[in-house]
Image 1 (cartoon, one colour):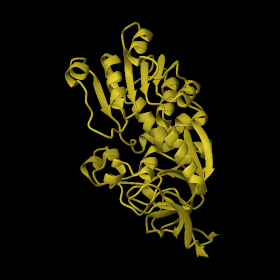
Image 2 (tube, one colour):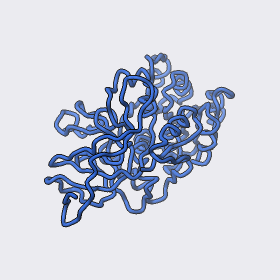
Image 3 (spheres, helix red, strand yellow):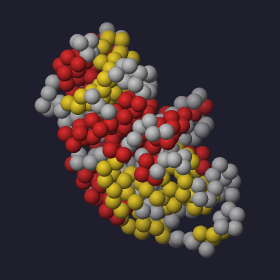
Image 4 (cartoon, helix red, strand yellow):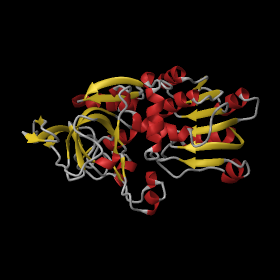
Length: 357
């Protein structure tokens, strides 16, 4: 037994179960690994629920991105909710028992970007589950400055998806969307969250484009007025028809698909705005002169979340009931069955998949 803050005691676990990427090949392993130790300003967290992200699937499949970005061995995962189990001697912001999630960008706090309020693009950041052992484990150690104490009104199943939900918040709210016409490209979980956020913020028309009919059905539950399969319908013509040939005010690009990006640029109204969160496997081709410069398009690249202003917005969307993410959270498995979730993600037969410890 080890003593933690106050007179509370917790059992010491020398080993824990975790999902680990062990080799530079496809696949992962559910194995026992040593429980991590904490430093003076670190916190040991007992993970309750984690959720699978597209990044985790890339690492599982060992895609080009993973091969260039990820170095095994590593516990993967970066989305979670859990409870503080132990705190370092200099920790002051959280205590044992607190229910927490965390910002997955572990920032340095000292570079030019961090000191100018842009820590989401910290030059020295480490990504949880990529550069730092992640959340697909019974226990997790993080520095206290990245922890977020969860609102009691937010259930665990929602608290675990705050990180990707925050991506959607920043993508949608790079500018105002109230009474605007919006085209969402890509109905993965973040695109689906963005649909609910755009609806909550008063978008007058929401069009969602995705080749996956399963996810298009979820988009309707999240507030899409029009759900279109680009393999069966002309997205550009449909959007023009729906906007009296004006084009949409806002394009939100989540797909990472070059063709979808160009469709969005074709249909955006002159003077409009596009926010891009999708990650592209290869160099992107576009007519920058015709579709951006001469149309006076404002283009935003979105990465991570603003720390922690986006977390406040996310918490308020969820705790107030302005957005109900439940339709997006479609499957739940115990951690040992993580491969079932990975397969569903790759097959596109799910929304968000969560894993219980």
